[in-house]
Length: 90
Image 1: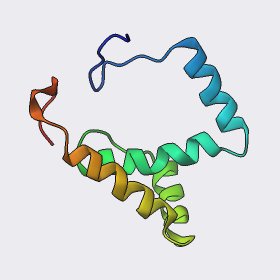
Image 2: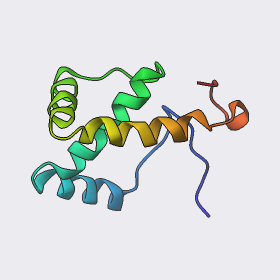
Image 3: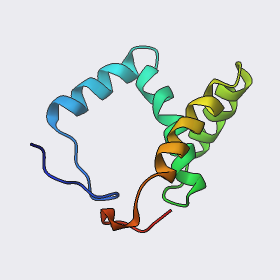
Image 4: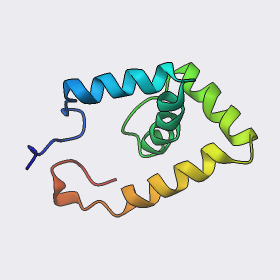
């Protein structure tokens, strides 16, 4: 069983760091998957997107709305988070 983590205070294991970097090296796939997540979190005021992330989100949206549709499912999941989970309700 893994230890409970809180937004802004989480950690990644060595294996998770390795696979993320490997995913980024492979045509930036891991980075591109992260961008819609950051967009959803930014709309709740939990993070700020960098200029590069904003640019790539727009590029993803231009190509058949891929960035937007990925963000929608993430926002739906965030909307179901209960405030008793250790961080402010969104």
